[in-house]
Image (tube, rainbow over all chains, first blue to last red; front, side):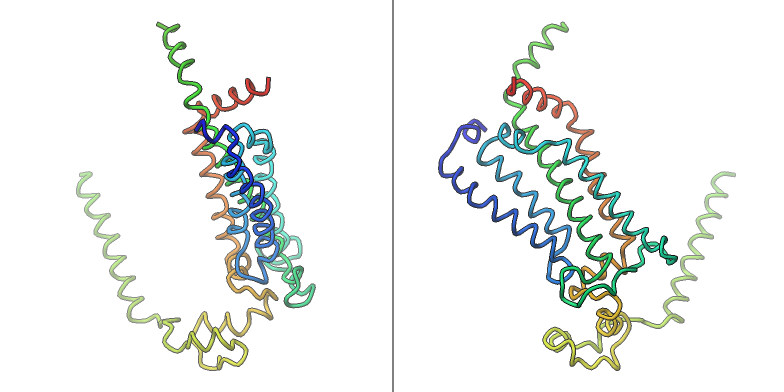
Length: 161
Length: 121
């Protein structure tokens, strides 16, 4: 773990090169979910791999300085609310839940072509992106906290006794 | 007394299950078994594929997907339109996973936050 905290030049350079690539690829897969293979789930996991790249290059300190867990948490809740709102559009239009009511807008093959399919796809993409990112931040925080905090834990136990 | 009740209830459940299984096996026709679908031809020229005799779900997907959803990705059309309610629960699995991870790693997460604050100060 100490090696990852210190700056390793090769890993840092490679992470700097691959971070924008992974972000662009993941966002592309999310945005084109309704017209090309992929979708919200897959693209969200691709985007959240940026957290791991940041951790490899800059350690937990760099990742925590770049990404805030609160925003990820709120983003996941926002994605869930968006999904439910887009699913309830059917009720507002007078049909059943999860009915695709906007599908006739746009041409076949465009990005904005399939109505609530695209919108729900983006909502699930946001939800998976932030959720998996938060999960990875949790695990990384556990990895980073363990070796540094062993001594204070022992001292606390000593104080109690 | 309790045991006899339990045995009677289990026998009723078992007889109902056997009856429903035999009924489904005898009376309900098979909707889709994939026997009439030529997968190779369907993948290579989906517009020219003869869908007049295709069976069940395959014919619905091939014939009516573009008219119904206007999404060229069939998988996304099914996951987010025909089975949208299923996807809702599926995406809430992630929320449950995060909740479980928070419960298990809560102490460790506090340690991590404390470490981050100490480093910031």
